[in-house]
Every structure is written in structure tokens, then in C-alpha cells.
Length: 287
Image 1 (cartoon, rainbow, N blue to C red):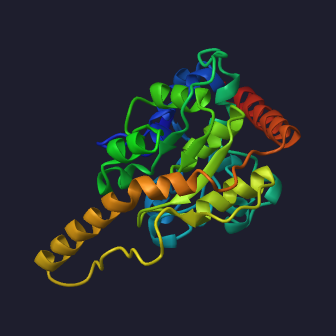
Image 2: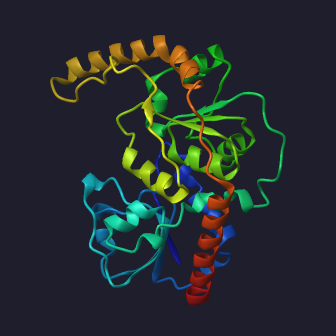
């Protein structure tokens, strides 16, 4: 069986965990039918991603709908949609909401590799991978006694940091998902242009969470336009980043005072049970 996921040159732990999580969730999957592609963790369901797989066999396990310019593919009869990240993805694909179970990363807390360890002392901050270069986050976090965790780092290392944290400031959605499954309170924030609120709604809906994701920085700090001469845009971006650096530590400190979230134990356990049932069915059909 093949695997489809987003592989970034810079690295992103929420995507890179695909490289090993399925060995735990579906042992032996690599030796299954080579004509089938497993669509894994990530916001992968859009027309540009999946149209090349038209009339090819796929099994979709916990992926979400989004990106790709908002284009939603028509479901091919050969695509076996076993479960999706949440009800929103199911609705967008015209499928029953019950198929929108949870993100596969929710199952990480059941893996022996992430055994019980003592909580660390400092809250951590995990931005979206594209926001890393906007600010000197190391310095900003040092000034407000928060640990910066680079989402481009080794997936196991990043997940370990999240699992041991007392609190997670998350622009990375998978930082919030993983914090939630390890029962670590989390605070969602948005920073960069690449923040996609709709995929968070999938996560919220599947976990019974009602939350508003507020910007880290004040509304008066606007991102520079992508329109205009390149030299002007580069200068505007440089100036913008300088402003963000000036305010970053203060804004992180203020964000720590916002309400933290955690799904109900019963909701989390029910989602994990339902996802395990979906895994068991996939194993019976393809294993």
C-alpha cells in the first residue's frame, strides 16, 4: 500500500508524523495491496491533490477538506472514505456527518512510545510552520518565560514537547489536537496568512468545542499587501517583521491570559473508540 501526505522540504511535524504513525495504527499496512493509496493525516482533500488519483483506489483515513483554492473533488467510486477529520469535511463532501470522526493524531496518546512523563515547567508556543520566519520567536519566548517549539523539527521530538507541556499556545492545529489528546490545555491563536480557520472548525466540531481564534497581534498590525512592485513588497515585509518583533513578547504574554481549552474526556474517548473501529474495518478489508 502506498501513502499520500504532504511532504514539505522545510519539514512540518503535523505532516511528517505520517511517516511512522500508520505503522502503529495499521501494523503491516506497507505490505498490503500495492494498488491502493492510503490518504493520511493532513488537510489533503482538495481537487488539485486528489484529481490525479481519479479512477485509482484510495482509502481515506481521517484526512480533512481544505486548501487547493477551495476546490472540492467529486468523490470517485474507487475512493474508500472510511473516516474524516470532522463533520465539516463530511458535509463538504456530501457524506453523513458520522463519518467525520477525528484526526488520526488523536490516537497518539495511546502509543507506548509516548509514555507518561512529568510535566515540564514552562508553557510552550508552536506556530504554524510558515509563521516561524516572521519573528525571532526564540527571543520573544525567552522574554516571557515560554518555550518556543519549532514545528519544522523532528515529529517525535515536537510531540514529546507537547505531551509534557503544562499549556500549549498553538497556531499549529496539530499542536492543539495533540495537546488535547494528551490532556494538555491549549490556547488557539492566529498569526500568518497561511492560517486556515475552516480546518480548525472541523477539529472543534468533532470535539464539541466552541472557540473563537483571536489574532496574536493587534488588528492595527496588518500584513503587507501581496500586490505591487516586488521591491516595495519586500520593504513592507521587512518593516512589518520589525513591528512584529517589537510586540511579539508582549503579545505572547497577553495570549497566555486567554481562556484555555480541553475537550471532555468522554468526547475524546468516544472519538478514539470510533476511530479504532474504523481502523479495525480497514484491517479486515485490506490486511
